[in-house]
Image (cartoon, rainbow, N blue to C red; front, side):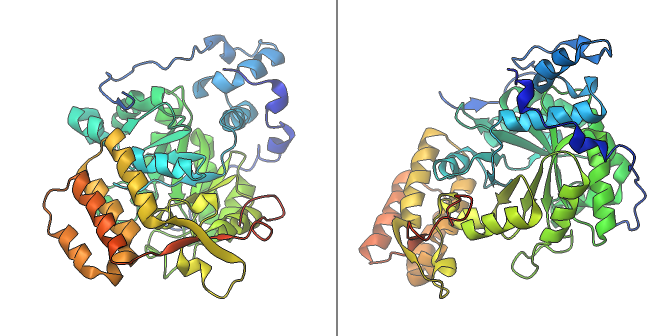
Length: 424
């Protein structure tokens, strides 16, 4: 797989970044593929080691750039490779964020049907993934339609991370390092956002993958309270070999997304400070937010998490009543509701089996507002220690018979397009 040189990101964009590296931090703060491969299973692509030679013709560098191992490239060529890969994937803008137990294959496929252009796996624990075949087979499943795909790991040991990453690299487009999880379990396990206190370790994780994998390395981060710390952090990751950054515009301590607004200005600052693709995460609740975030941050795409759990059709222009009935005109019943989406999700689960704990979680997220109207139906669900698809389909039918329906809304066609054509 190769790109024409005309599709590569221009070198001039990167010249201004060559002399500004500084790392001092001011604060410390079937159809389904299951992984049973041995570590080190090679991807399909062939990589030419001679790309490392400075004597190669420039044309040969460019024609092979998209398929070159990171270890053979430095400086502007590494930035070009990052952009060549992103362009090869179609420059996806609407992306399913990584969610523990929630961004599994059936849910990813449902979101893709409704406009998502790329997706992350749930966070996978690199040590358990490396050691436990049952964990691998249950927690990571994919299919040929499940691309572009980010396979995300948490880790605090470079060798363990590499072993896990090698098992998935034939089946994904990025191996992503979770540097943003702010939960207590991440503190106890010394991973996620709590590695922000140990930047040398973070750098070693990125370098280990960048020097040994044939797929690009991406990182998902949170911001520091100090903006310059955030910028320095992003530049350090870029120099270590990161090919794409996803930036959640909240700090490690800002766990409540409803209480704390995402700092899109910080994301914009990161985008302006680095030369690799940057994705924005935080406060993406409907397509108006998508458009506004892209415009305000200059990001190359957006991630949505919690909002997608309630509305997997968000990227297709549907919005929940919470965001449609706030006085804004031009919204109409989209002839789709969360019960419809749940039925579609359950059918995907029958096709692509996943643990029942994931399915139960999605039922509660999708039908939460419905259960508030008929709480006895929720109680019946909670009383079941074991679930079946028949029972869950009957739950939907029971709500229908009780007259519950909360539609998802869309914009009228003449009002629902922004200046660049994105549905609002």
